Image 1: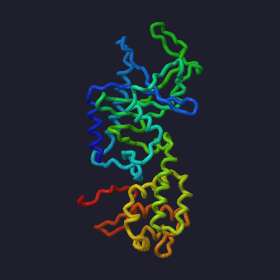
Image 2: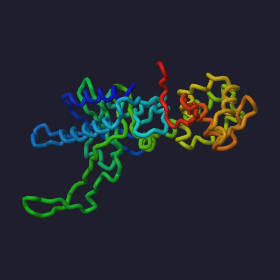
Image 3: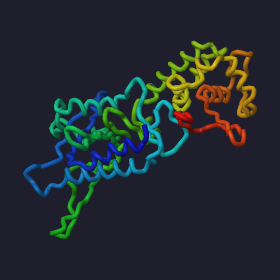
Image 4: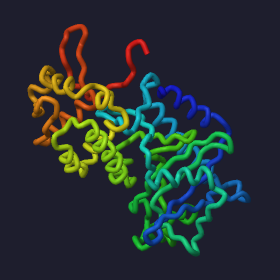
Length: 325
């Protein structure tokens, strides 16, 4: 899938006649619940809150998606590499709670309670879930809410009273809304534009570690490592774990190329002159952090060779599209 296809879907939604729904994710004790928020007074035509929030979120959606190149591919999150300004789609087997909540809003919005000041509080808000669209076509946004966005009345804030030309104490808490989002749901696909923020927001480390262990099992099954258990030592590093996950999801090498040929390749490619991996002929022995990184690159086939110059390169980012496909 190319970004142009996703942008076209987003543009069609933003061009139609839209409404907006806001949901708060509240943290109560150790659990999280979702409640819908009343932001429109149907009897007060001067109340433009709903319209202004719709315009604010719609503008940031358009801005973010327009920042991508139409000809770029939408990448698998499990295959995330070093490139910047890339759009990813979530392809791991297990969804984090935050993404499950977005899907819950999409499917069961009529069953959710309503935010009520008699039982709920603004300082319980941990996230916004915003729905833009109509009954047929919609995009759902997830935005983390930080404590700094809640202005407490105990800070003694003043607001102007223009017609009296004076300042007056604010008698209630104020919730500041920033028009942004970290990931979104569109046509049942979750798109992620900032992996770093997504990792911090979601319980992602646990999920990616579980996926990475599937790669370790796959590596163990082909018997290419003398000491496969050393890969477990690196799972605390989420970047390493994500690279390891790519092997389980998308390796073009493991279980495809015979072990002996893989070992012989490391003796010939220039990258392994500076980043050697010990071997006993048919198996590798990973005894340093550097050798583990080199092994992951090897399994993910992160190497290129110029047909023009015969130069060999380490690839930090590459698509899977083959010439002639």
